[in-house]
Length: 158
Image 1: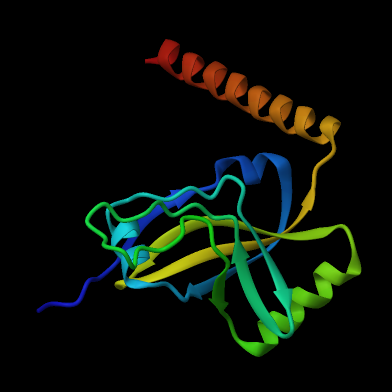
Image 2: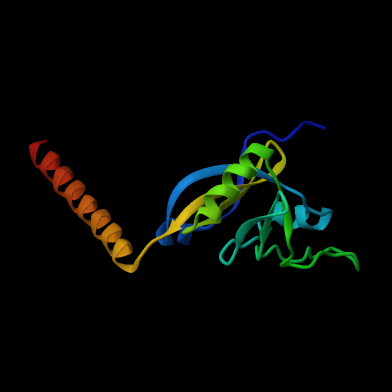
């Protein structure tokens, strides 16, 4: 049986990039049960309320919704359970120190399969204030308008 290659994105947390300023990103493995993997392979997951934390030298992912597997039996998994993250000890210490520093949180950005293994992209992030969010939207809108003007000018020159 051939091994799976490449990346297959299951879920992304688009709101995270809007609500937080991303400082660092990490790729972490996930400890999952069989029915959770099957549910993820079907493309079903939600990172909306998800967050990660470090406790007793281990990294954990909590409040990520992976719905029950349809063909699962009595040993199906609970949809929102605490799942262990697989990171190197140095990465966990670095993350823990940054979060303990204050003002930082650990947010999942995306959940995907990389070469057949479930991975989550984590970000050490700082919450944005309301005016920061408005400024980001304004900058994006200004960039879009400038691009439109440039493309209109190019089209006139043809």
